[in-house]
Length: 517
Image 1 (spheres, helix red, strand yellow):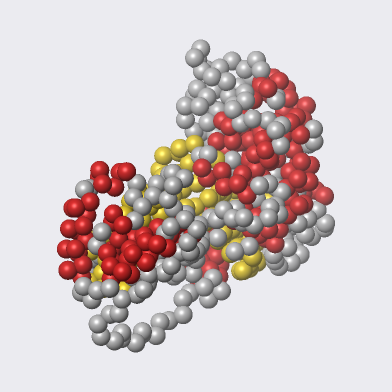
Image 2 (cartoon, helix red, strand yellow):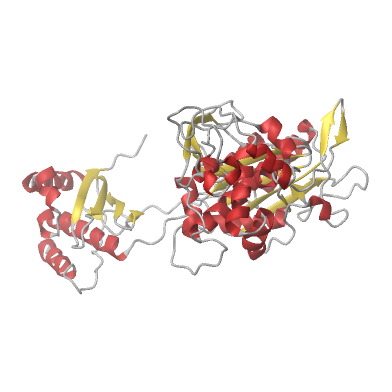
């Protein structure tokens, strides 16, 4: 009877035939009733934990006012303002209070460059001098150095010296003064394209490229082409144009007291750090970035194609490794990191793939962590010089992750081709013969078919009858894994289609599944 059932399933694999589900085999005995499980944690149920983390940070770091928030699946699901906008009015911070976000501005500049590339107005591999003639006469560090490219500026691989102490004070430089600075030349720290070194100057150059390639001031291009289409009406560069009382005043902590930092007007270096925004507005930006994952057939609704956003964590320049902040037990781990278009990108050992950045400015500090595979981002803005709070925000994210409040998104349903491949696996298992299903040429060469038949027979003898009704778990549209519960154990398997127009399996594996522990 099993052979007849297998032949029926083989027929279902013929072109034009519907894909049939294999019949599940009964298990011996009755299943035990499932134990009642506690409700999983959510961001909302973790609100008290986050409140405690950030209020403790405020007290320890002497932050007069801050706001933090969590974006999940396109919504600002949690936001809290703490402290005051300024020490005179004592107006409470809320989700509409404006903060400068310093170097987190670089992500807007990076995306504007990618948008101009999409529009055919520049190429990332072009030399910077093609768009900024003031740098054409720069003397390169060695005779064999190549020219600095647009991509070098985006990834901090131009060979410029790290300039955080100096760059933060160039915010307000006028266009003419910046032009004179560029014409005066640049001393290189290393040869272009040979290694990373963080450069605010490089992102200021990107601002000039946006000016020249778009025909608009970079501030106007980014605001009109990216921010306003996202509804970010309280976001911009000119802090002196803010409505009275709308922003958090920046302070430094000095000699046991807060000292007001001078306001820095808008200028040419704002492309590296000049954005001012609110929690409500910034959440719209993060929701848009997160909307790029996973890839889908949904209509494009953002100012830049989702595929362009997805390029960002793939176009990274390698930056070695970073050690995560210690947890409550002092444990850390080391993960690889890179930089791309205004984002650090790490393949996280604790929180998963993480796009992140901090901002530090006279009077302000900020941080953002974005987990594209979970559809979640956490950010914080504060009104104290260089108080980014990166480690604290990371710790909060780690708490959410460990509590199960932000799991990776569940994979989408298997593709029709993967479902068909899974039916083929069931046919081969039930009949004990992989030759009954479409096989790519490598299958028999990798392991002879008679050996495969013998291995299936031995495994079936060992585990007994199996329930094959469990769904296949997609790895991608053409590859998946599955686990079957059996009378005397379990079977773990995987299927993978060949990269051919014809339906053929290049992988068909069955093995005994031995749970850890």
